Image (cartoon, rainbow, N blue to C red; front, top):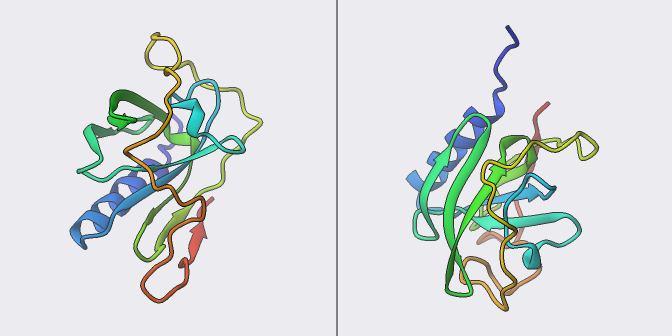
Length: 148
């Protein structure tokens, strides 16, 4: 039997660390056919999501999938992310967190739900208007460690 990946456990631990310390957990995700996110917010095949308690509803961080509902442009949408597609999880306020390698050439998993693609929206309540990643109080973005 194959060994279980440490990645989902590290994601849950860093999410808990962020919330315990009053930080806002952000997740960078590689978007492919299996990833259910609002496509209009995807840039260069990636999206950054605020996964804090205040920004999500029904967050479930399993070993294979991360699922939650979030509001984009005032409309609640179901978000489904394969754990293998998570590029990083970090605290918005100081950039501390962890980055992960993602094989962008691997075949995509089948999506969890069979509902159609997310509708087009004009704006989001879940993201910042700033295209640059947030900086911490000391002005830097922090450092992420790649785990293989």
